[in-house]
Amino acid sequence: MKKKIKQICAANKKVPGFMIKRLRQQKQWTQEFLAEKVGTTAATISRLERGLQGYDSTTIQSLIAVFEIPACLLFASSEKQEKAIRTILDLIEIFES
Image 1 (cartoon, helix red, strand yellow):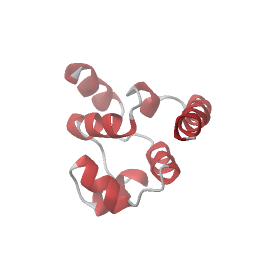
Image 2 (tube, rainbow, N blue to C red):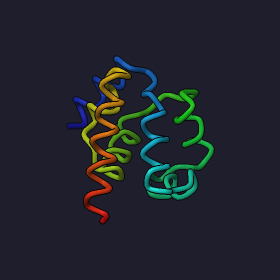
Image 3 (tube, rainbow, N blue to C red):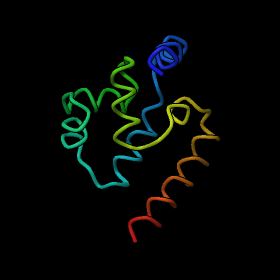
Image 4 (cartoon, helix red, strand yellow):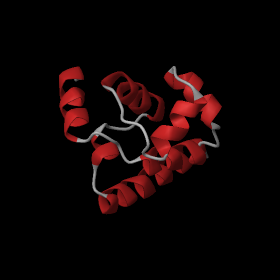
């Protein structure tokens, strides 16, 4: 898995941050809370969400574990991401109710 994530990271220097931001907001987490769960700082989460900082494989693994999503969703095209986000948010709502 680590090798696959490293390949994805090399091909995509910056992961679209809106997916991370949207999932974080859906869970009503602050950047500070997410940072603690991922093992980084709130400033780093902010830069990642805004696309100002690239990701390493450890960060990607932490994010997919925290959000419980497949890594491919972080790298999908915007249209596919939007559809995936809607599906994930619907599932979260179902499981939380």
